[in-house]
Length: 330
Image 1 (cartoon, one colour):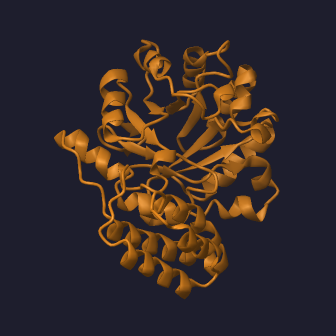
Image 2 (cartoon, rainbow, N blue to C red):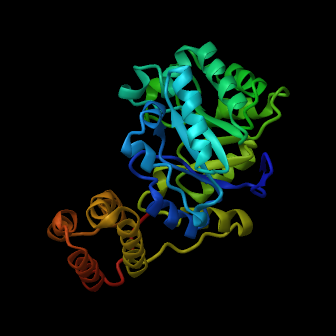
């Protein structure tokens, strides 16, 4: 699969951009486990053009993450075009437009998947961005706004015609949010549409190596994107690749492996965000790394309230000692 001059090989696996999750430390870990392509957390176009500190900070990318894309969102033409130019200066491999976020605070303003209620504007903004930057432009979106408007086949053609180089489709409508099961049928319809020449990436409910294989074999997508299933389980990228290559399932990591991983992730978080920011950022990941440990309430509380790096490392080592040999069920 190619995006412009970028060759990602056959059946690449993408890490989905997730707000407050896919920061540099998590991307570092996912890259270790074989993610072929990653994105920044999505960045507000309004925030970028106003030079808002939080938005600008999200432009930070590192050579170990490459290839990487910067994802922007918004609903105003001029702001989106200017934001794309600013993002390009950070030197990613591509610019991705978020037309898929279903959250109310985003969609009700007409941004994210709210743009699916105004397809002409979606196409117009995309066209303007493609013309304003030299990098490849890609789009991430959904099946449609709701069940009465599952119009992704038409949208895919129109976005392709204005020059996007890849389309990622999440198999839900905006109104579904993240409820119910992702419907890959329409993703497959887009892929087999004789008018579609660009690569199609499928996204939604890829939480096992077996489901990844089905996505490739049944729906013929060019790549898959893994999102929520990677949180607390970033080794899923390695599991998927191994299964696709061999047809065999890798054994799940034991607790000692996960504690070691959590330490690396934590220290990288502190390195990239400073002590306070790194500690606050890692907490949501700790919750997922150790979900399912029995009688864990007291240690969990300490892990999620401590503001001292040494103490947190001591707590992690204590978890290792108490639960040594414990095997999680994934």
